[in-house]
Amino acid sequence: MTPTPAKHFANPPYRAELFSEKSGWAGVMNTHGVNCLTFVQDGKTTGKVVTTYDQAQKIAQEWNK
Image 1 (cartoon, rainbow, N blue to C red):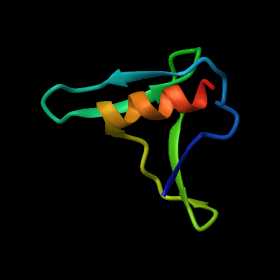
Image 2: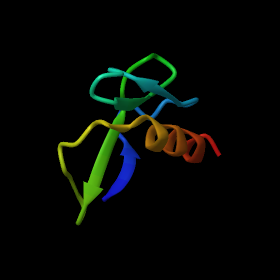
Image 3: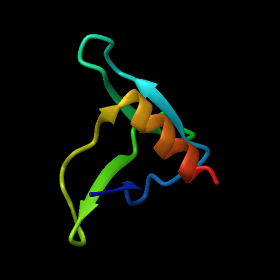
Image 4: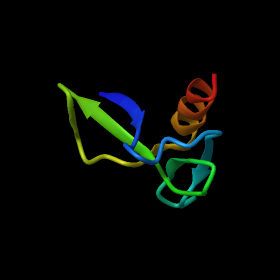
C-alpha cells in the first residue's frame, strides 16, 4: 500500500496528529486540519485512513519535501 493525500485535500504543509493514545491511531493533517491520509493499492484506495503516529510522522515529512 502506498500512502497518498486524498484527492482534493492535498494542501500542504502536512503534519502528523495522534488521535488516540490508547489505540495509537494517527493521521496526516493538511494545512486546514483535515486528515487527508489515504492508502492506494493497485490503483484503488483501500479505505484505510489511519496509521501509527511514527508512520504518520514519516509520511508527513516525505510529503512536505
